[in-house]
Length: 289
Ligand code: MN
Image (cartoon, rainbow, N blue to C red):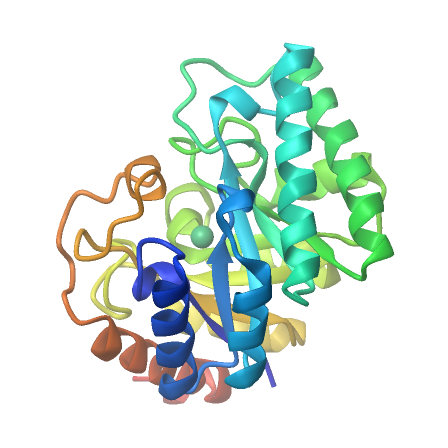
């Protein structure tokens, strides 16, 4: 059985105490096991109150972030790399304080549309910084996930193959690949080969439709993807991710180019997604709707 999660942006755009409570209650009521909490600004998360809410509602948490260009560990500028490494260290502290065992996202570069390709010096800086983060994370039993994203959101890891090569260079057991169907739809040949490429290095999954709205309303071949996960024996976390202008995060929504209103009712969206994911993960593809 997979741990089934939902991204906090389905419910709330920020993480004040009230927003945290609203998101955690809604996640638990809908029937998910886990909530993914964005930690772009690690200092803004009140870890004590969030952890208490998680325990009260019997939920697990995962943490994610994308770096910005001023804190890009794949930069050639040592001061920028240092700022990124500090940001990641702070995000790790938050992850540990929440009792979570996963920190992922675009942690290896900025989450941004780059105006040029990555450089080998920048990639080497990123490998070194992720190695250091992984070593700290390992002491707390936390996995570091490299989310493979499309070309408009990073210039470094756009395919599962690139992520596997990067992880080989890092050389740490607790660094895993994080696949997201929304990005795979743009960059990969299909939805099964990348799962096979990752093998047991696949450590986290985002389920997102091609339009980032309701599952089943876009072009992602979910039956093919779910079948590949089942055949690979993947038992890790599968988290639903969706964005609409109905819920706005002050920076993340703009980084992700969330311009359109794809849904208003996060509760209906999330309940539908949970049912869709359970069905997809449980039923052979020949019987899927
Ligand atoms: Mn994602």
